[in-house]
Amino acid sequence: MGYFQSLIVSTLTFISLSVILPDNMLYVSSILVALIASFVLSLLNVLVKPILHLLSLPITFLTLGLFSFVINAVILQLTSAVLGEQNFMFSSFGASILVAVIMTLVNSVVVNHNLTK
Image 1 (cartoon, one colour):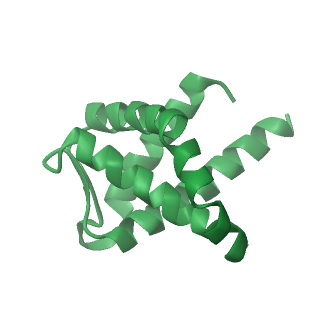
Image 2 (cartoon, rainbow, N blue to C red; image 1 turned 90 degrees about the vertical axis):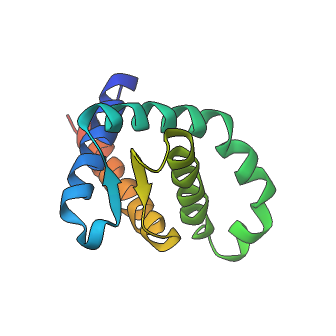
Image 3 (tube, helix red, strand yellow; image 1 turned 135 degrees about the horizontal axis):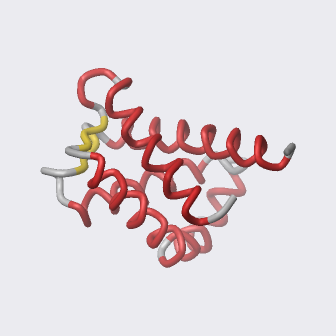
């Protein structure tokens, strides 16, 4: 899957989850903000995520990889901090973990669908 396709999938996931999840667990002010959030998320995934994975390697090993969802949630929280809570925010850290799990599932389904073509 190409970079722009990945941006579109993330943007659509952010928009969909902001509508589907109850009690404003994820707030996205507009489609443009969702697109910018996808771009910022991709930058943070390239720049910050490898460092966090390296630092948390022992606990990730002990939890059999489940701690990676926490790292993804931290990256989503950083995305929210960069964009500002008036544009893009999570109601709690648990909400960002839930969004991280759902985004991982969506991305794996889209990537596996592209591999079977």
